[in-house]
Length: 184
Ligand code: 5GP
Ligand code: MG
Ligand code: MG
Image 1 (cartoon, rainbow, N blue to C red):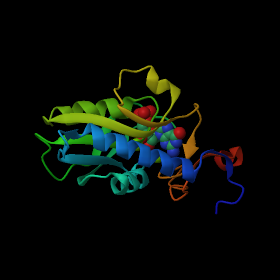
Image 2 (cartoon, rainbow, N blue to C red; image 1 turned 180 degrees about the vertical axis):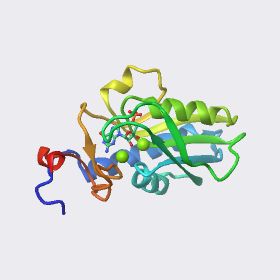
Image 3 (tube, protein in one colour; image 1 turned 60 degrees about the vertical axis):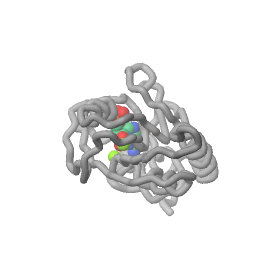
Image 4 (cartoon, rainbow, N blue to C red; image 1 turned 30 degrees about the vertical axis):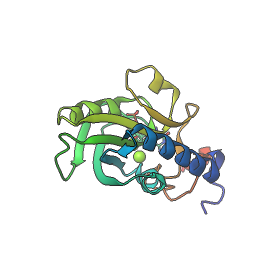
């Protein structure tokens, strides 16, 4: 698949699945009080987080509910501007719910910081973020990402939900693209 288009594999399928199990165990512990799980609502950000969301929800050793949002950040194909538009909103009220935002990647953190403000204004009982990937710039901005799968170098990555021009989302690993892909 995608013969010759992937330059390198940054995170293998096995590494992703192991990390998901580790995060799921930790989160199940964090969202329990006196051995009782609280009602956790996962909010996946379409489309990038869809693979992570579905694998993570199944790895989580506690019941959970799934919601999705679609946002678009204005900007070029490979960087975001911080101006965000809601393409698909949540289907229900999150007031009083324990909400965990499930993200694919935090790069500049602009999208997430907007999303956090937006969801916080709806008065959830708690609001945290779990992102599979984080890039170095994300550390500079004040976006509290409680759970992070992997810190990766500042390179454009694809796979496992992440796209370039809507391609490569279906790869089971995270990789970088061969430069020829950008020039064609
Ligand atoms: P941020 O607002 O943190 O800069 O990035 C927001 C969105 O940009 C991410 O949720 C993701 O959809 C996209 N993005 C950021 N870095 C990458 C990357 O390396 N690869 C891909 N495919 N998308 C990225
Ligand atoms: Mg995203
Ligand atoms: Mg994209």
